[in-house]
Image 1 (cartoon, helix red, strand yellow):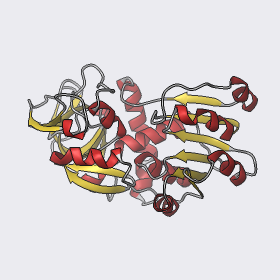
Image 2: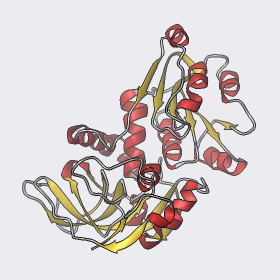
Image 3: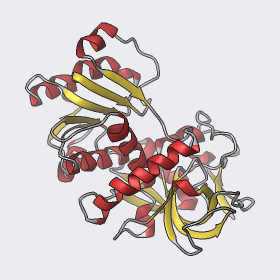
Image 4: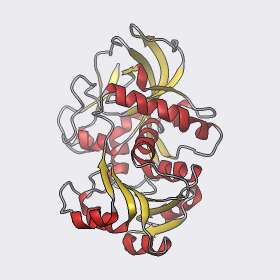
Amino acid sequence: MRAITIPEPGGPEALIWAEVPDPQPAEGEILIDVAASAVNRADLLQRQGFYDPPPGSSPYPGLECAGRVAALGPGVHGWAVGDEVCALLAGGGYAEKVAVPAGQVLPLPDGIDLVTAAALPEVACTVWSNVFMIAHLRPGETLLVHGGSSGIGTMAIQLAKAVGARVVVTAGSAEKLARCAELGADVLIDYHQQDFVTEVREATGGKGADVILDIVGAKYLERNVKALAVNGRLAIIGMQGGVKAELNIGALLAKRAAITAAGLRARPLQEKAAIVAAVREHVWPLIGNGQVRPVVDRTLPMADAAEAHRVVDASGHIGKVVLTV
């Protein structure tokens, strides 16, 4: 088969579409003929040599895919060759074939085609696990989403609105904020022009955000704590603004607040399977009935993965960038 390889870490030009050995499904795995994958910022870090796949995982980038079942490994039940599926991966989505544990495979939601479905697994699992399973966002609460126009952000806005929460977003341009508003965001903050702590307090009558979904990390830590409500929950899922910052524990104690940090890629298989099962139960019906929809900025051929990385590197997109085989 062909896959995007990274012979040497570097810029987008480091991504090479090359012939590689076909994967074989091990016990409990499903082999998928990939129709499409999607670009995540973790892929950019892997390309740069900063985010190696977990031991035993595919060496190729790509944390999600959609395609058709090509073969079943020993012990796999409930799926058949030819089924159209999408999947959460530890790696290997930038390829013509990938083997994935059966617990991380999902049927396509009603009304969603194969290419569009590739934009769903990583964002749906990330948002549902962090905002709902860990931070327990409830109806009537306020969610602050940093990077509201990103793939994660566009999914978070829609899921929060679907459960009856109020949504505040930050983004870096009027165009991106307008798209967030179209998806249901209630309060729009241009982080270039406005201080999100001040804006969140004004929008909530001084209360603050009950849950914050943060892709920035260290740069926003102090201000995120200030923006939290009493009993607020800060869910950190990214490090675009650095990894080290000072934390005023007194401020955290005064608000009886909690900070969590969680990724998906390195989690045990049982945890990933539980998240995927929860997404199938809670998120897939919302997509099927049209309350939630994947946002795809553009599609590019898999061989043009370098160009896709340039787009994401420059934050020149809204939603997800999808690669097709």
